[in-house]
Every structure is written in structure tokens, then in C-alpha cells.
Length: 389
Image (cartoon, rainbow, N blue to C red):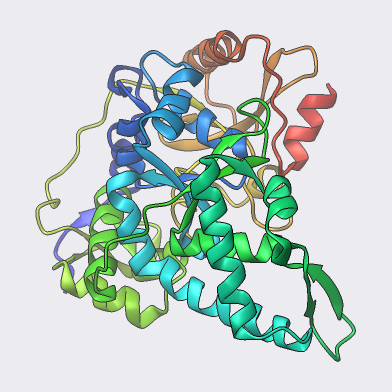
């Protein structure tokens, strides 16, 4: 039974504080950003940096590099929806147990099947895994190509889709490293090139704590609901990639309380200590990158993203591009042109005061990016239009 109504206005106010988007609430460190948002999308290498820079009080790429590669307080790993994320180190075992462990079982099973179809057995995979981990530990940091030269089994071929029209031979190297990454035996290290590069080195992993699945799912749901609540069961299922029964059990385990939201007939949920109202901050604007966690946090998005503007800001696969926000609503898009100029395009008339703050944010990004040129991995209609000028 729902007893509390959370308006769309209040949900947008929560974004300002909990997602560190209001200027006076920006974070002191990359770790604080990741902790506030639970996880940063990492499918596009630039997103991790840009999502952090958008929320840092003193934005510098060196802060993110330190956390990822020197202090190891942030970890890049596959997790929710089989997507690559960067998560706080202390949360990595929770993500692995709640989500990635099942992916590891399925991915390794598929690799064994494809290997068997190529005439390779389980002993082959066990040997290649052990030799690969040993080589990564011996060298400390190594690329996949370098590993292929020193671990012969990584050069073997496996047969994918035997007997189908998609049948093809694939090198084992990428598949083996993916499986080892799911297991935490190896982790993604420094990029090969600048922070914008998607190629990376492999480094030794420490594995993961053996947390019961139900406990891990409850903890991940608790952290997510703190950052993204109120949210529906469908939102949690979509964000995690879990079965609906897992989402339901996790919400029950953390004692989530049902509330009513304006934009969805289904009950939404908040933590039991999160029922108090949230005051709106001063007016704020933000320019967030493609695949930013805020834009990708819910399955139902009408309370912050009008249906009429969605096609301009998403690609066909559902990946969001760079977005312009005003007081918790998406009102446009932005891009960086080849000459480095940061430009915005409005999809709603938000008034002169808003336009000034949005322009100020564009100037802030101009200073942050400097000589760097960033093109989103997933191009959207509006981003392309703005880039081409």
C-alpha cells in the first residue's frame, strides 16, 4: 500500500544532490563520484572520465587515472546487463557475486562448447587459463597481443555457431581473457594510448570475496535505490539485468517501501529511511556525456526525458548521447566540433536565465577538454548534427 506521493519535481531535485549535479555539490574525488552513482558506464572509454569530470569540483583527468591505475580504488569490470562499468573497489565483489558470476558460468560454458566443436577439450581451456594468468602475473601489465605471442593456446581457434549460417572460426584469445575478467583473475589496466583509447593492458586480479548471491543482490539494490530511488521494480530489473524474481527478492530483503510517483502507475520504491521530502536546490544546468549513469539510470524516463525529444538523443540500440540538463530535465544535446568548440542544441525553450547557465556550462567544458577531442563511441542524430555544424 503506497502512502507517500513523490512528484516529478521532487525526483528531479534528488538528481541535483544525489547525482552531484548542482555546482555547489560537486565531488572532491573520482571515488566520490563513483560511490554516489554506484557505477560509471565504461563501454566508451571516454564516458568514465567525462562522467567524473562533470561532477568534480576541480575536474582533472589525472584524478580518474590515479583512482583507476595507481590507487586501484576504482575497478573496471563487466557487470549489470553484461555491460562494462567502473565501480568502487569495495563494491567489485558485490557486483561480481550479484551479477558477473552468472555471466562467467554462461560465458565459460559457451567457450567450452565452441572449443569442443573445434576439437579442443576442457583440459585445453584449463591449461590456457592457467598459463595466461601466470603470464599476466609474471609481467604485471601486458596487452592481449603480447599475451598471444607467449601463450600458444591463445592463438588456437574455436568454432562459433557450428551448423548455422553464423558459423565462424574465432581466435580464443579474446574469449579466454573475457572469461578470466569475469572471474576477476585478471583486470583491465592502463589504456594503450591516451585516456580516450579503448585498447588496454591486462593486469593481475585479486579474485573476489565469496558472497552469497542473495546477499550481494540485496546490497547492490540498496546502493542503487539510495542513488536512484524512487524507482520501480521494472527499473531495477532493467538496470541490473536480473530476473524479475531476483529484483523482487532484493527489494524485500532491504525493506524497500512503496511510494507513488507521478509518471508511472506501478509502485515505486525507496529505502525505509528515505521517505522525507527533498528540497529543491538553486536552478542548475549540466552537460552530461553519452552513456552517463544519470541518463541511463531508469527504464522509464518520461519524468526527465520527454518522448518527443528522445529520438534525437539516442541511437538505434538505445544508447544515449551527450545531453543538456536543466533542473533535472533533459532539454537538449551538446557536442564538441573538430576544432574543439563545445556547442549545444536546445530541444525545448527554457528561457533566458536557463540559457545563460547552460552557456556557462558549455564554457566550463571548453576549459576542461582543452586540446582533447572527444567523439562518442555511439553517435546520435543530434550529436552528429551539432558536430557537423
